[in-house]
Image (cartoon, rainbow, N blue to C red):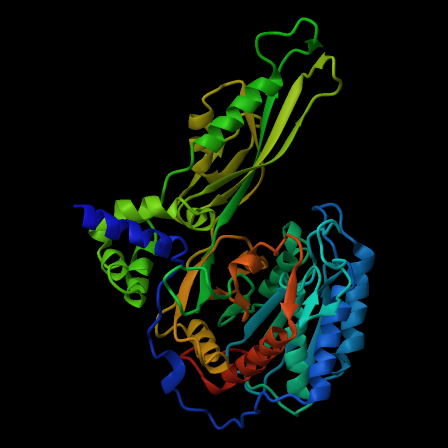
Length: 517
C-alpha cells in the first residue's frame, strides 16, 4: 500500500502541466508536391539584420490599448505608416490588395494563381497591453537588443507575429514566389480590449464577400519546454479551441449614513463577503467532461513507469489525476471555469457609509459548460450567457447582490485535428520541418482569448500556434515585465511562416473548389 501511494505521488509533478493529446498521425508527410518549386528558407546576412531591425522599430511604437474606449490612436496610425515604410513590396505587388478596416486594422488579400483552391488566413495583432516602466531591465518600448535578445512590450504578444508574417511574405516576393493558394493576412489593432473594431469588422467584411476559409492560424500556443516535469522533451501544442469569458459586475445598494453610527452590515461588507465566497468556492472540476481525459491517456505513452500506467488508466486513477491538476494554477485553468476578481469600487469619503459597492469578476469559461438564457436581476433584457451565472448566484446566495453582465462570449468550437484536418496537419508538418527536434505535436485548449473568436463564421478549422519555444519564465513575461524574444527565435519564426506559405501550396487537402476572390 505504501509503495502504491508513493507511485501515485510520483506522478504529481508530471501531471501539473499535461496539456494536450499526442498527435502521431503521418498527416501530410505522404503527400507529393504538386509541381511547385520550393524556395529554401535561407536568408542572407543583410536580410537577417534587416528583419531584426524592423522588429525593433515596431516595438518602439507604443500601440497601447488601455480599454475599449481608450487606446493610443496616434501610435496605431504610426504603425500603419511604419508597415508601408518597412514592407513597400507588399504594398506595390499587383496581386496583393491592402485595406484599412476599422480605421487602424489592416487586411491583406494575397491573390493566388489557382482560384479553385480554398483560401486561408494568417492572423496577428499589433496592439499591446500597458507597460509601466517599473521592474523592467530596459525601457519597455525601447526595442533594445541585448545579449542576443530584443526586449520590449510586444516581442511575444504579438508584434513578433505581425512582423514575421509580413517579413516572410516580403522575402518570398523578392524571390519571385507567386502563391498558388490565395490567403488573407488580418492584423488587428484592438485584440487586447475585445477586437470589436478590428477583427470583428474584418470578419464582417469577409462574410459580406462570401469568403469561406480552409483554415485560420492565430496566436495562442507555443512549443512548450520545461512545463512538464519528467517529460524531458519539448513538445508543440496547437490550440484547437479556446475558453469563453464573462465579465460580471456585482453590485450592492444600501442606505447611506454617517460612519459614527454604522449599521450592522454595509454595502462594502456584503459585497466583500459575496466575492470571498466566490473565491473560496471554485467552479466545478470539468476533468473528464472534455477531450483532456483522452489527451492525457495518449500523452501518457511519453512517460516512463509508473506515470505512463496511471495516465493510460484514467478509468481507475481519474480522481487522483483530477485533484493533482487543481494544484497548479495553469492546469487548474484547463479543467474548470476560472474566477478572477479584477476590480472593486466603493466609498466616497472616510466618514460616509457608502450607498453602493461594485466588484467586477472575469470568468474564463471551460468549453464543457453549456449556454443558457439567464435573466439578470438588474435589467429587463435577456442575456444568452452561461450556466456559470446560475452557479454564481447559488454560491453568493444573497438577494441583496445584483448582477450586471458587462460582456460575454462562448468558448470556441473544437477544430478538427485528425488525419484529414488540412490546416492542423499542415501546421504539424511545418513544425516538424522547421523544428526537426520536435516529434510530439499535440492539440490543446487556449486558456486565454484571441481575435480568432470573431472568425468562427468563416471557418471550422481555427488553430492557435506561435512557432516559438516557451519556458515557464517566459510565460510570466506575457502581460508582465521583461518581455523579450531572442534574435534567433524570431528568425526561426520568419522561417516558419516562409515555409508554411509554401507548404499550403504544395500540400493540397480535399478542400472544395472555390470561386475567385
